[in-house]
Image (cartoon, rainbow, N blue to C red; front, side, top):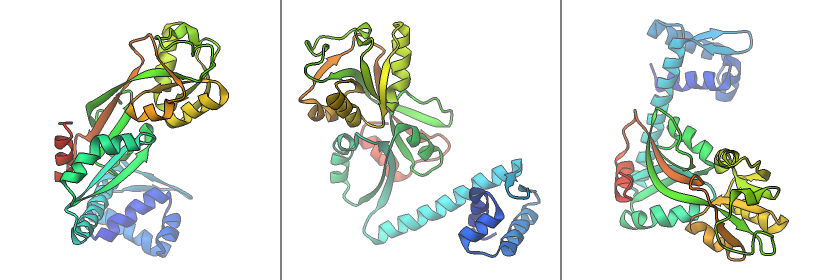
Length: 290
């Protein structure tokens, strides 16, 4: 079996048909079909049920597909590592972090580490938390950081990092902007709210416990958008508040909320079944995660 055979099998599955894969790979369809037959003959198992327009993996095919993807990922990692070595970098750290708080994490996590290890290169994905988890599960990055409720995935090991209280960010002149004391959830009744997607489930759950229906006017991807919506449309932004948010709220009233359940925890994620690279271990150790 050649590396090309594994790559082409992955392409067939990802493209959804042999015809689509042949067009994507610029390989004649009969040649690609023969490669598939040779793979099945070599391993003595039927991997794909062929339909008229699409394909369906057999159980053996799903096993082979996952292993083939891993082989391709390892090969790609070797190429990247060698390139980094030739460019003068010792290794590459692949990590996914929450979008909207990148600057905060650059200083919090990477500033001292990068200064202490100038020969390390970085591949940083800035994503909504919901997309960080698939990145780690699929091996695109070996470390992920989510800023939301701790995900319940049996394939992942979780390391809690920071706890952020959810606060109300209120524009001056708003009826609830007359004090900085904790605001009771019942006081939000009827007022339009702007909330980041990462905390939407928490908001609905906690408000429901108080028998209050949140008037969610907009769900955003990042805190800054929720804050700007509140500033522009006289709404209230409910956001998980960290140091990164302080400069964005100097013209607003920030009030804590009188409910102990309104918080999120930043959590580092790694795959249980995949050993971390040396640079991954070094990063988590020096930042105090493990």
